[in-house]
Length: 71
Image (cartoon, rainbow, N blue to C red; front, top):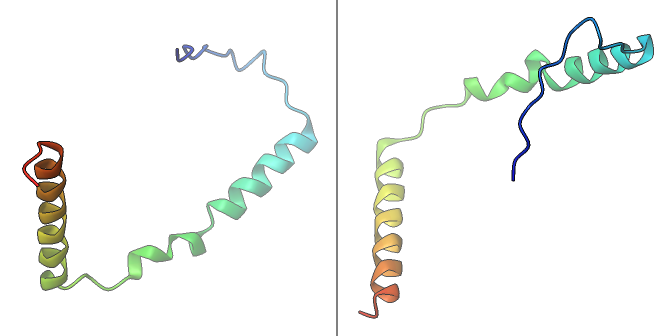
């Protein structure tokens, strides 16, 4: 079972200055603009996208046929 999230009151949360500094360090390391370099990737050619789509459909159809006992 997944436990429900509890609402926290910001006034009751007391983080030490060292913990806040660690949070800032981790956030600046993981969320730096350099980590967002995936947006500059070239687009995938259309024939590769269609080839992948056909491959997925063929594999899925083969799996379904095998599961139904047709193969």
